[in-house]
Image 1: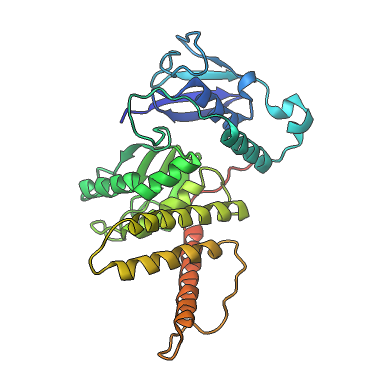
Image 2: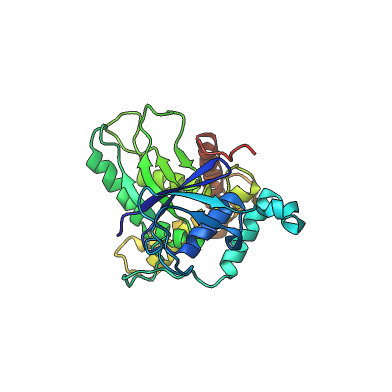
Length: 322
């Protein structure tokens, strides 16, 4: 995988650091800048040393951008242009950009690889903390998360790009489980237990990762956040269930598949859902199969709700003040 290029783009006194792959196009850069500054691509003028006159589908390296380049963005924002755009709320603006991006033809990427996954939508670097014990184990865990097929699936589907995937030290804001810096510039995860030589379980950390990936789009833990976060967790579970359905297991399929199915169904109602199951959750030997299933589903939903509330309470990410 190519190393990312880190550039800084200044607009109206605010500097936006961006992590891009060398074969990302100017068109993709312009889309990212529109999300950050509300300056439409057709109104953007980029000033930086060594710029070449190239088309928008050219790679950023062909335009002269390289690691460490400082860029000045000049152009009016949508609000300054007046009209309909001036009346859009911040959420409406984000929704419009995401909707237009989904309707737009795929952005061209210069790549020599043959993978079907878009190389932009990934973790561009992995950085364990070298001063902590067992940095190689931390790197292995971060690498497993970055290469997790279900995580790669949702990142590609929702067009998530993260500059750096790293860890939170046990002493670094110990009340936090995760932190998303600048909507994907970096995601920090608490990999370790309170003991420096112990690690949290993989599924715990991956669930925090899904939570922090949601912050690439939404800053506050509002209903928009809850809906997308629920979708990501459900898609991860359904992806793994689909993979398991195509694999033959000796002895374990009868246990893993139903649990995954229940997990996916429960996830659909955990965040923002209104389904009420009712009744006690304690199983009885006289319960029918449907009643046992209902109780297991209810217990799973309750567990997921508690886990999600803990993630919100222990997440250090929030939307910037306007």
